[in-house]
Length: 153
Image (cartoon, rainbow, N blue to C red; front, side, top):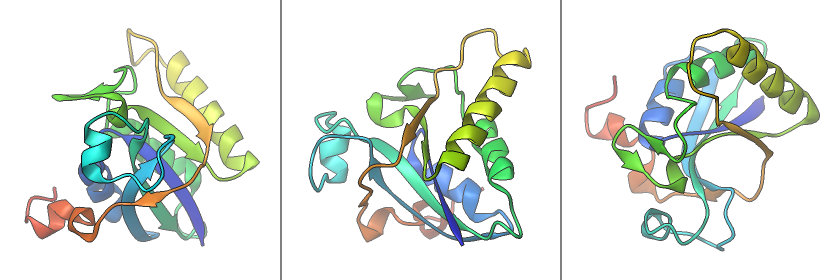
């Protein structure tokens, strides 16, 4: 198994998108990329931690490739929108690919470069590519939130 971590706006929708992918074994949501120990949802929402809301994806690379996961990542949010997705505003909603290996970093950078040159967007892509840092798991009430509420698409 392998792990991928993505920030693309509110983690509930990001998780719902990846949970539908064949080869994804499990998902969980939490926080990464900040400077605050043991952040809570309210801490992150208050914009005092520097964290992004993330979805961590455990997947079987024999069934789904990291490249395929990146294709989904790019398709589920606006990578040209700085610190916001739709009505959600704040650094916790920024677009970030957190890489777990040098290979993931190279693939992510290549993927972003291809998208930049594709002409799909009029504005520059602001997605950050950063090494993983401490992952803080969100409380159970946030895990598979949209499924629990019956609103996963």
